[in-house]
Amino acid sequence: MALRTDLSKPAVVPSQRTDTKATNTVAKPAGPVGMSSQSSFSAGAPSKAKAAVALNGVGTKVTPGPVSLSSPQAQQAVQQTVSYVNQKHPQLGGITGGAAFSPRSVERDQLGMTHVRLDRMHEGVKVSGEQVIGHLDAKGQFDSLTGNVSDIPAGLGKAPTKLTAKDALATAQKDFNGSTSRAPTVEREIVKGPDGQYRAAFHVTLTDTSVNGGKQPRSMNYFIDANTGESIKQFNTISQCCAGGSAHAAHSGGAAARPPSTAATPGATPATGGATADRVADDQTMYSGKVDLQTTQGKDGTYALEDKTRGKGIVTYDAKNRPEASGTTAITDKNDVWGEKTDPARAHAGVDAHYGAAMTYDFMKDVLGRDSIDGKGEKLISYVHTDNNLVNAFWDGEKMQYGDGDGKDAGPLTTLDIAGHEIAHGLTQRTADLEYSGESGGLNESFSDIIGTGVEWYASQKNGAVKFDWAVGEDAWTPKNGDSTDALRYMNDPTADGYSIDNYKNYPKMTEVHGSSGIANNAFYLLTEGGKNRTSGLEVKDGIGMDKSLKIFGRALTTYMTPQTNFSEARAATVKSATDLYGKDSVEVKKVQDAWTAVGVK
Image (cartoon, rainbow, N blue to C red; front, side):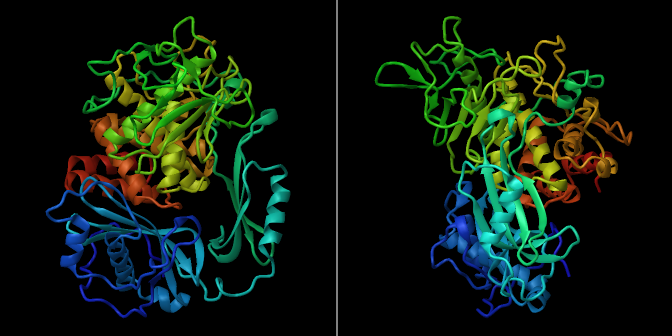
């Protein structure tokens, strides 16, 4: 019996505590989750009255954001979630020999709801990619449950394996065939294979963020069968900004005809950011006109690209054309007027990267209601001038790295939508952590395109020099061919790049994550603007505008999606998100449904 994504209103959770020997228990988190030794809970649920007071802070203003896992509020929310799983799916424990869940995060949102993300455990071993998320309403009552959990044979977590962690590491290293820039990690896990069967495995991660000699950066995840040594599955979690149709087309004589650029339906003007009355937008960017950068003055009187006004900071460094970005080489200016003709040429890319990070931070705060990618003001670190003539930009799991382009296929890859796209991979990593393969991988890429496009839109509302359109990376792509509409991808018509698909019916023909991202990309476009899907011919009449669409999709990503969410589950997540925000019978919910139907997702 499988526990499928369940976004409906559940039955009331009993208020009395259950026996501490309940089937499903909450395990201490493994590895980096980091809870105290007192963080293991029974499955009992607190009384409703207490839950409402603790979770909603009756009489007290509740601040949105992560809640400490060791706090009483988080513990109560975790208990309620596990109690609900026990109540609705008691067979899991009896069949599997004892299911458990390890708390990963508890977050409150701007609606006052609390969301509990739990990693699935089996016999003390993590189940790869499987999570459940419990959702409590503003009164602390259990609202719904998200996640996929299937039955696992007894013994997979406890039985000895024929191979050791060292054996699995050796197998992965042989395939990786290269040095690593970070220490390898090996973790015992249970993995569901392509055949649907669970197997004891080792999860090996090997990372090399160097791009020396034209290499692509890699953070390879290998899942090695702990008994046979077979690779069950593997994928690279570092995305490449320039993979996909236009990259292929540029090298083969050009892509298909480009769709015209269109402006988004106007949404609410962002509330904060930009130049203030006592500041002047006198910093010249390459792609976004005149802006006002927040910088820091050093002891020597020069100014550096370090912004201490947003969260825990935004800083932009010079990678000095090394194949591996590192160090803290500051990009400086003598008079704090950036981008002047007399300024060093190396500073120009830094100005755009710094502005892109600032706009992405402001976008997340003003539109998504989130304080940076982790919800706690995480510092955004960018490096420009990685390697020489690098046609790439990427989030390497810790920071941004931008190449300068080769002058033919691309200029410096520091445009607003590319910056937003790559930093959004960090947001996904900190929240849904969508696996970068299959349908979840296509969604991972799509949500970065959506947020990158959202950042460009957001900046255009505050800065008249920023031109918004539905193309991705167009400002940097093929700068010398005279075609200003040439781009990496096109959300209004994904098929225009000659590579991507726009409808789920064609998914079996295109499973590469950049190509399949066109499905959700077009759903988002149709929701926002209205229009027809090219493949199905189905029309969404009248979009709901950019602001609402971004809030719906952003909430779905951070709140209702898990590592293995597929397209159908993404539809359910966005419908639930729209329901939370605008009501179950709202026009917004109907338009979300229509948009996904148009792109073939049911």
